[in-house]
Amino acid sequence: MANDRPARKGRKLTRAKVLRVQWITPHMIRLVIGGEGLAGFGAGAFTDHYVKLLFPVPGVTYPEPFDMDVIRGDLPRDQWPRQRSYTVRSWDPHALEMSIDFVYHGDEGLAGPWAAGSQPGDDVLFLGPGGAYRPSPEADWHLLVGDESALPAIAASLEALPQGAPARVFVEVSGPGEEQELTTRGDAKLMWLHRGDAPVGDALVEAVQELEFPDGEVHAFVHGEAGFVKRLRRHLRVERGVPLEQLSISGYWRYGTDDEGWRAGKREWNRQIEEEEAGSTAG
Image (cartoon, rainbow, N blue to C red; front, side, top):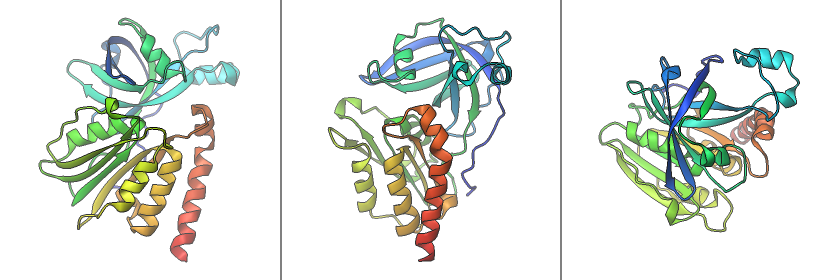
């Protein structure tokens, strides 16, 4: 299986329009985005394809044509559009429609409130796509683990599983009202874990630690809040001995840190994890 390294597509800017707004659950909003600007959009190869949505800073006038390289060169950093990365839940190249799911927590954050207030016809600017993961047909079985932020990619991955492919799937959400109907051709055993008032990811860590791994080579996708991802990465790499090339694993977000802060510190976070793993393996 290929190592999980991001596929970089450059800084292609796409302009699109909101077509439909759908409430999937009380805290999950789906925006269907389309328009001729999506002609030639390059999603489809990976199930964790993502785009970087651009949110202009209120009161700032941007150059036309809109160009991020020009903006970064001519404007101070605090006037650059805010970026938020979101998974492409589905992509229809014939209809030129892309769906993106947003976790919504009221007025908290940037993208969630924006999605809740969106109307058909609203403009959308984004960069991408990027991506790196798709369930390998060579794997003996698959492990998919994540919180709400990883649910769109897990759902897309389930849809891409080969016929009858064994999978163990753990998804943590706040409660039963946040469960979604997911489809797959694979032989997937899906467990919904309800967080309640517990810390994000505790139930996921416990479930994976207690899982009796099937025989054979696993291909794993583990994403979500950085704290539990770090714990599971150590478990899978050190205690289970899963090779890194069989893992797609990283923190999508970090509790107590906004997106800008998490992106700024993620490289160092990854370096520290790699050093800890190397020390554990050597010992």
